[in-house]
Length: 438
Image (cartoon, rainbow, N blue to C red):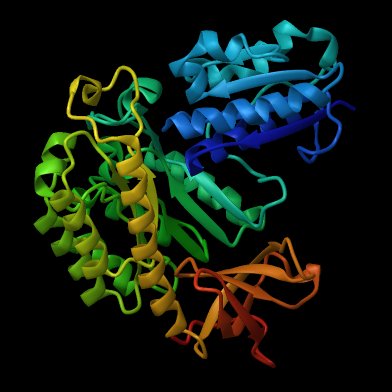
């Protein structure tokens, strides 16, 4: 039996697509292998959101190329879509596949290397979701792809194309299959899922889809991935508040900048005031909601006052976490034409200041949670100390003692400490299957 090892960089959407490719190859009797071990095919699903992401992709490709021997190295995804020639020329790369053909990876590999594929295998594979996520107790489901927003800094519309939504019927079916396969938590993912619609099914919004999923499936935890702030309305927030027992109280709302001037230059379809309105509504309607964000510093033309506006908004919103980035020039984006570049050293200094603010806010908020009791989903063995990694509904990571047999189950734990970002906890005696008590 041939062995397949995969590695995914970037977003949850990429993670879902890697698992979809692996599931299709599983129809040809390919067995999954840890990425560090020997395999017959190494498949790397790439990200190109920043220059740093490109560099990370190249480093991982190089590492595999040095140890792969006679194995095949296949590189797919966004980096290939944006710079195919560069990726194809990297030492050790045997095949590159862009996003337009990613869904056909199994067919392309079979045509390229027919000797690796068992004959007579049932090659039929349904369109839709994934039934197994290798080594994971949580699942993701792609409900849409592409984006029509065309922000000045973003390469995603170029490498992912325009917005396309899955059908509501397929989403309900696929969530149901994941539940039947034993997954307790499903994350809905895509590039711009806040614009989900299915006119044929009379599903006019993401909120309508959530109502359908809670009604038609038995999913225990439904988590929403990143949402653009301009599409978050009272109906969605209130529905999340009314269904906290099944919809995770976590919102990831990309900010990018706290300066209206820079938001305008970025072509973001909201302003500072709208962002503050949305986050205030969420905090008022959903007790203990956790809010995360993406933030960029050093966008062309950013002044010290613009940066301070971002820093002050981070403090005002009190983000629980934030992914912070230094602006990265992406060829083919409108921002390339803006000449007022912020010196790299200054952008780096601002990034360090912003990271300090984010950590300060998060550390203070997390310290206040020590001693409280939470329901967690036990996810996997932690990297250190013989502990298990678990996750709360609010996306907090908690390390606990326990048997690997509990992976994939719920536990009730009391938080005993925090490093500022993650927690330690102890199970509450006599309460194995948890009920949310916060």
